[in-house]
Image 1 (cartoon, rainbow, N blue to C red):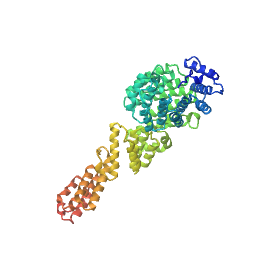
Image 2: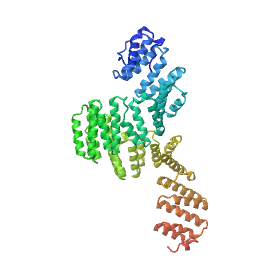
Image 3: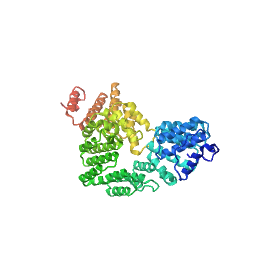
Image 4: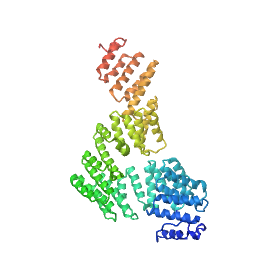
Length: 571
């Protein structure tokens, strides 16, 4: 938000140096020096702008810019350009990830200067802060309150924030057309690497993987070379995951052809070498080892060692892979995000392979050995695989703990997984909350069906199986809960001698029963209800479909003491 340098409030001669510096920056002719100490309000406000620009260049810590604007506001709170300074505090705070501080600054603009020309951009900024604080409804309300049309620049900000809000709430299908609008109408956003990365994420989320790869493989020419290399490396990663090694190699070689620093170059060379691991893990590891020896920095060294570990994991040598990463523990190289990301990738690969092989015990064993790492760093997909395995081996409490610790908060399918796990441990409140959280969310068909089934399980647990509309044939858990609910309904009816109602409830339970045990109980209830109601003894033929000698002998023994015993024959 550039100051109006020709405005009367900035005519102070004491602010001339900063005024000229900002005009020169705006035309690309100069870089401002450190601002002088000023006694005038105009000088302090422009000095804060110079401080902000210098923070963008990395010459000073970003927090210094926030402090400079705050100092100007504190010494001259009634200055004509105070609303813009508050807006700048908001955006500078967002850059630092200080969403609450940004929220306060933007809220002050809206509350103290409601007629300011910065009101609209303050609404957009506050919506961004609220989105980062996961207060999505408030953010959406602010965006909806912006009167259209707005100026072209602010329009792009509004569209970009709507796209960010759609992504933040998991509505990637809504984000895709907004991203396309930004790409078509907002060229200055194209010069930001985050724009392309976010757009690719949404394309991936809606299943348009080919489009995402094509987008990343053709980075905008406006981007600086380092940013272009980042996008190409992401394109190579996706291509490698798809088994398209030729495309992966092309993307990496294209990135290496750019003017980038030695660290970025070494990382790209390492990823290019890792492609050889598909054919010859030994050759790939040897190349990576050589790159590690010549790594230009400790960070790059840790990254290359991590790629060695991932190459070992690709070959199924998970123990060796983790041992290589353990060598970085306790060192500055092992404390960075790169080493943790590689460790997570190795464990995720291991768990995925065991899960695909139908080995829940193996998954549980890996989880037990690496519990701390997985509970704190596992991806949502890995957490769901772990939880599924733990549930299958009879550890639902541990499954729920893992899911809750790694809950991304914006994935409807994950929310349903949390609800289902909560129901397994008897936490009906948490399960109900999971269903209610998705009430106002547009869900993909498969997720919507899963939500209906979970809601059905809750209704069954609550004693209202007649309210369930979900199909239980593909969900054993729903079938189990419905069978139990109808059986309980039959028992209740039988207790009050309502034999017709009991027989009907038991019949429903038998139709839904997911196993022979539940089916036998329901069938026995039908026989009891029909016999007590005086039905034809032939009703006991319903037992013929169940090949359980103990049940048949028991019923036959009881039947000999009743009037309909002759129909069953001698025990």
